Image 1 (spheres, helix red, strand yellow):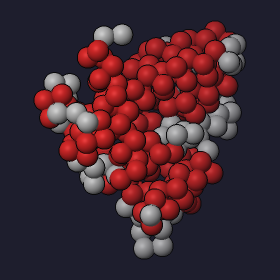
Image 2 (spheres, one colour):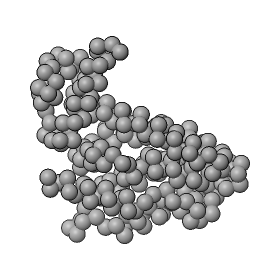
Image 3 (cartoon, helix red, strand yellow):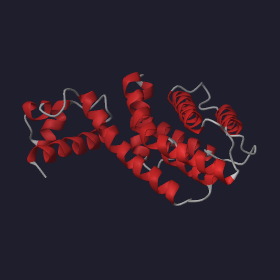
Image 4 (cartoon, one colour):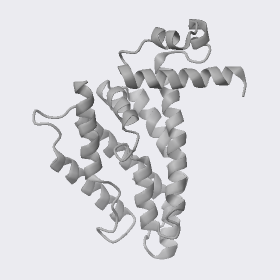
Length: 229
């Protein structure tokens, strides 16, 4: 591996570690330089800004998401509905095992209202998931579980709706009411989304899961705890 590539990876790893430890806003480029004993020129050779570094971190996690999506679908071969549930578990912000990264996104993309970063994360999730969901829908049609004459367009629509509902719930976690996150409201919105997907695919109502309300609550608890540290 070339020296420049190694240095870039070191900056990404160090930046991510410090963002987790100190928070994105409270971590300066100088702190990253000090940690690596690196000059400013060494940093700016690879990244134009701290935001671009954060986007590179998101890109790396996007690669992990892509691998998770592939594995989730492969592990449920021949069962379109199970594959759909597994795919959404892989791309969901609140069903991730990596809660530190999820909290980082909540703070930067949502609490700090970074629409650019939000779009970036959406792209990293959409790109690997789109060909998979299209194939799942085609397989579901062949199995008699789904019916649509436009599997490619419907697949993209389902993912776009999921990205929108993710944004909605993430904003509710980062900007809760006086009594905290209203889980009954979250549940209602998620169930409405699930029903919409089933209707779009002409699947039996209640046949899919797509989400776990308990996982939303768990992420919210982790996020609230992170604010107290």
